[in-house]
Amino acid sequence: MIETQIAIIGGGPAGLQAATAAGQTGAQVLLIDNFDRLGGQLVKQTHMFFGSQQQFAGTRGIDIATKLAKQVAALENVQVMLEATALGIYEDGVLLVEQHDRVHKVKAERIIVAVGASERMLAFPNNDLPGVYGAGAAQTLMNVHGVKPGHRVLMVGAGNIGLIVSYQMLQAGVEVVGIVEAAPTIGGYLVHAAKVRRAGVPIYTSHTVKEAYGEGVVEGAIIWQLDENWSPIPGTERDVAVDVICLAVGLSPLSDLLWQAGCEMAYVPELGGSVAVRDELLRTSNPEIYVAGDVAGVEEASSAMVEGRIAGLGAALSLGLGGETAFKHLQEAREQLTALRSGPVGEKILAGLRRVEREVATDA
Amino acid sequence: MRNDENTIICRCEDLTLARLRQLIAEGYTTLDEIKRISRAGMGPCQGRTCRALIEREIANLTGTPIKDQPPAKYRQPCQPVKLAAILGGEPHAKDS
Image 1 (cartoon, each protein chain N blue to C red):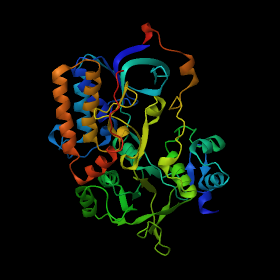
Image 2 (image 1 turned 180 degrees about the vertical axis):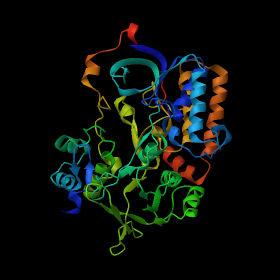
Image 3 (image 1 turned 90 degrees about the horizontal axis):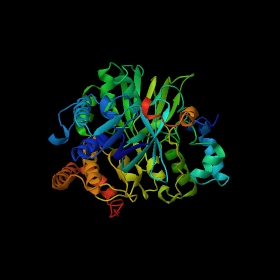
């Protein structure tokens, strides 16, 4: 049995910042991640971030991962377990972790769940042909493993992930024949959309995939147009010859551990699916469990970092650690989060949060 | 082949859209019922691919919005793990 004060599951932007914030209060922290290096999805983000200076605007995601991991490494009271997978949270609060084919029981006074989200799939004929990828998976292939996913790509989804991965494919020398988007407008930031449009990639709004086809592998896709009620319009089919269909159709919070821990959950489409009801310090209805990052509601890396800080400080303060300094940092983090959510995208997030944020904290 | 016969909903357990629609028509109208009768969600990805698709199809065919559908039961372990890892127990202090 490993005993610690605060266990953090997930070493992405939220978990790393939670570890630093909690570690700086002097808490004993255990940071658990299933990959062989820290950073989560940041390690494959080769583009520069927007947002605010505090959240490393103008720095490439992969460099942010390095910076955040260095901050964690500088804290002697933060232990890191890599290639370690959280398997479950049990009735007695014990967390089971598998690492290198051995299991470890972890008993922590607080657990911060920062496990992120998974990619959504789309149902269309032949969606199991090799060559149909999640956009994030294709991005991992290219930017982490140095492998091109194919030669000619159809991207499905014009949110930020679809736009950014399309651009990175162009950088890798992969042809992107087009981006289809079921909504009547582009969901991602205009700067990202403008970059791929300047490179000659068409974006078909109000379009979706009708089917994929090919003998054993993807050889092409049929796309068609949607009317104002999102119903396909027969006769608008278009055949695109591609060997890769990339799906960037949204993310779902990875909430398994929270259900297991008995946290009160709510289905909130604005936040990507089922998320834990929590208070303003991200403490769930299970007073030992906090959430941060995409698992708390699918948003962005910058807000995930700030949420990580809030959860880390909140967890430490609930254990009587950190004092005035932690409280001051907590107020600053909350102000930063409000500022990050002040744009039009933030409106949707805030609407979702109003449905899950309430007073839940009790004495543990 | 009909279009929904080659549309895969759960790729771990090979559940097609056609079979899912048939199960819903037969009265299996919750995630857990679909899971028990078809094994959807019980493979390597533990429902991360199919869950949202099944919820949407149940909503489409029964009219019950996703927020009103009873949630699935989430059991440990949430990732596949070798039995040997569990049987091996925790490493002793000296070899950890």
